[in-house]
Amino acid sequence: MKRAGFIASFLAPAVLLYAALVVYPLIQALTFSTYQWRGVSAKRKFVGLENFQTLARDNDFIRSVTNNLGLLAGAGIVVVAVSLIVAHLTAGPGRSAKLLRGFSLVPQMVSLVAVAVLWQFIFNPEGLLNATLRGIGLGTWTRTWLGDPRFALGSVGVAFAWYAVGFYALLFGAGLRNIPAEVTEAAALDGSKGWHQFANITWPMLWSVKRTAITYLVINVMNTFALVFLMTRGGPDRASEVMLTYLYEQAFQNSKFGYATAVAVGNFAVAMLLSLGILFFLRKDPTSSRRSA
Amino acid sequence: MNRAIRVFFLILAVLPLAWVVLSSLKPGTEILAAPWALPTTLRWDNFGKAWSEAGIGKAFLNSLLVTVATLLILMPISAMAAYVLARFPFRGNRTIFTAFLGGMMFPQFLVIVPLFLLLRDWHMLDTLTGLTLVYVAYSLSFTIFVLSGFFESLPDELAQAAMLDGCSDAGVFWRVMLPLAKPGLLVTAIFDAIGLWNEYGLALVLIPGAENRTLPLGIANLTMTQQYQADWGALFAGLVISMAPVMAVYWIFKDRIYEAMLAGSIK
Image 1 (cartoon, chains in turn cyan, orange):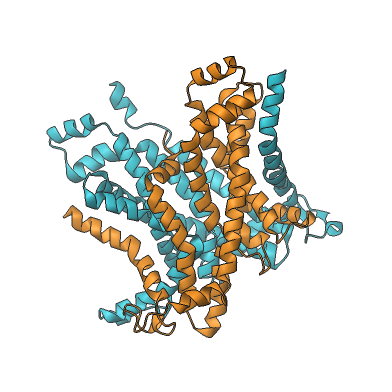
Image 2 (cartoon, helix red, strand yellow):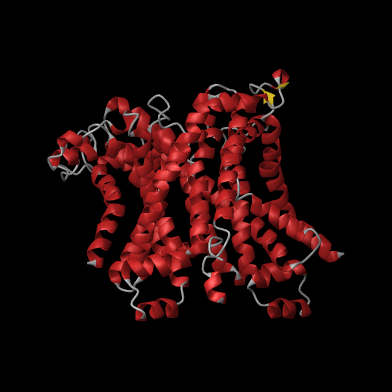
């Protein structure tokens, strides 16, 4: 009995705070999305699933979903490829490998606000990138990167990739260390090395890390907010709009709190569906059959 | 060959940040006019301007206050909950643990509207107290998850010996287990602190006014105001001021930080 009191008293502060500020708003989010509501309680009107029906026909929302998916495909491939290379480069002993490991995570430590400001200056029409292009005689390649609907989203993707690579390199690095040395040694004895070894041994054996990395990528990209909000405001003309900047606009500029919450639920649903799809797609360990054989 | 590629990626990671530091020492007009040139005169007064006139000093202190206050509440209550969840198999234990874990699954923007209205009703919108409480609540999941791992790995014998010596359950925790878990507490706190120092989305919505801006809000605001003056020196100095503490902490604790970053992602 004394122990029950001890357990309850130790759990209480965390549980109460979590219930009030995490669980309760989470339940509210689901109910809010069924209201037409501008934040004044008297004017709350139950509309059932109407917000979601509107959402499904809202071209600006659909645009933001496709932008999110485009960002995921484009930046995702770049991030996975580059972080795999960096992971290999940091795997060895030696000073330069250790230095790279240390410095590749430095962008992760910077606030996304700082990342956005920095890359704004790089992509500025008079900025670092165009100045460098002019300096090396590629003046015709200069663009108004963030102001051009064809390049705005891609430019944000570059900033995201720069920020994110360090973490995924760390993740893949841990995966590489988990591959038993006997496996790679045996493969090397059989004459498998370089690209052949990577494609046939390393890549399949990174299976569980790959799954983790892709799930993280889905979540990170679907949660993109600060970079787009600060670099382009979703523009020009919604060319780089993502779900969460659209949510912010609906909620805190248009005061459509009910509709904004429906956007939030939609965002969560897209992320969940994608994650579950990945877990299903990568459910089988491709090395298990070989191991048991 | 590999070394050259390593140097290439190293430069890619660091060069943009080195450019920020270089620009923070330049006269504002030279930053875009001659981006790669060394400063003609070293403008240390950019830092003074950023700190006082541009409001970065105030934002720095706000961020410091919020981060420290959050950790002071977060670490004890998470440690207590994690300890009980890790070492006492009472009924409902797994349900509570899973509920805490679930908090890491959804984006904070899913609840941003209800959270905004909740704080508004509690008259805590635009206050550092409100932001601190929200930060504690949204850091609980990760912190409890990592700390319960540390408490699980501690040996049983010490706790039993202390019980035999007449220690109460709470006494065992405060006098024996908590000191043993110190390394775990330190890594987790450092990792939480970095995230809190850099947090933007929640602060943007929950701190609409100017008085209580945290550093990320201050920097974002400075970008907009400086646009009209075209004097970027103070902005870059502000960026350096906001990044420097995190960089120092990262470089001192980087091997421990790697562990925290991988916690939960590698099984």
